[in-house]
Image 1 (tube, one colour):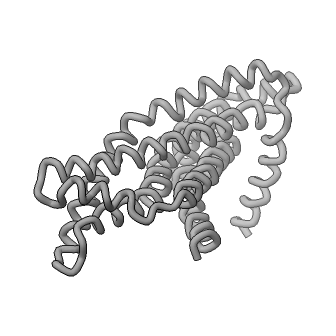
Image 2 (cartoon, helix red, strand yellow; image 1 turned 30 degrees about the horizontal axis):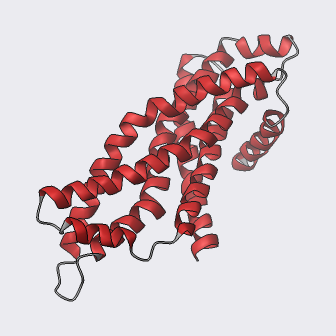
Length: 246
């Protein structure tokens, strides 16, 4: 029953969130600020994770395909498919759920316990849309860009392994990257990322908005936001994979 109650609360809040902003000029300003805070500030850590994970995937794939019957270009193909279909859209989104989700929940939760949200409501402002909608739109715009950058850097990390080690000849690795390429895989990955971005930002905003109490409850809301958005993200990953690839 508690789960159903939470789902009902979430749906009712989202009905308030997805309404026309009161002032479009303010909304655009908040959108730019949130893209910077939630997207650009995550770029460095996403880049570091992607490069090293691409390198690790290449090394592990090489070790698992050491056979004269398996062509060397297979490594590049397997790494590309792993990065594009799963690693960049899902693993990076899980990382962003921790970084972005906790940030959104703690920011809105702090405003709730300090009665800033009550002040907005007193002034006749739809506080849910005013605070949460710019963050949802910002994540939906920024996260796919981060994932595209992650894909490129992960594949580049694998290429560097080929250049500086004897794992796979670099040209064979590039042949694998370009073999049997389907544009649909990119569209699928970006669509998944778009859905994940909405899940992360909306659930985090929901937990922050329903915070009651003081600083301790803000911390709990932040943890709940990360855990809740991560679980729902993984659930939707299975559903979307089954729909589009099953």
